[in-house]
Every structure is written in structure tokens, then in C-alpha cells.
View 1 (cartoon, one colour):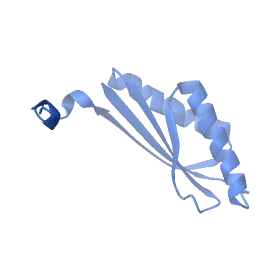
View 2: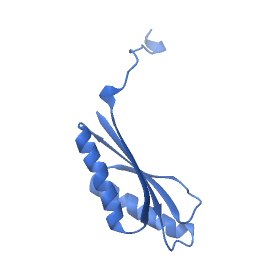
View 3: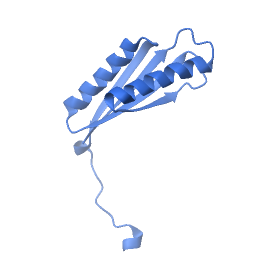
Length: 110
């Protein structure tokens, strides 16, 4: 299993209050969820009117597919033109590469 994460920092020009920022946030998150079936959430900067940090996560069985989805999400958000993209960070992890601890029986099964 492969997990991809994308963090985008956006600048919402003209947002004079948190209500305007929430409108942009909700619009971006809803559109990405509908189009890509990806997990999406606001990550931070909740009290800053013009700074918006969004996180997106995808799951796949191939690294290339997860990477492609994250790239498409980034381009899609930029094309929406609801806010200026300031920073983009992404990471793709293959869970096959992770070292797993040996299975341990739960105490109620001992």
C-alpha cells in the first residue's frame, strides 16, 4: 500500500474576515473531495484571514499513481484560482518499506 500526502499553503487575497476565508476553504476542499476522492482538511493558520494551509491524502497500490494524483490535485487547486499557491510540499510513502513490529497478542487473548 502506498500513501501520498500533499500540503499546500495558499494566500487568500481580499479575505477581510474569517468568513471569507472559510468560504474559500470549503469550496476548495469540497471540489477536491468530489473530483479526486481524496481526504482533505484545513491544517493550520485558522486565525489568520489570508493564510490557508490545506492537507490532502491519497491511497494507492502504486507509487506512480499516488504521485500522479497528488500532482493533479495541486494543479487543480491552482487552476481554481480562488487563492494564490504560495508553497507546496508532498510525500509518498510505500508501506512495504516500513519496518513492522512482530505481531503481539492483545492482553485479552493471552
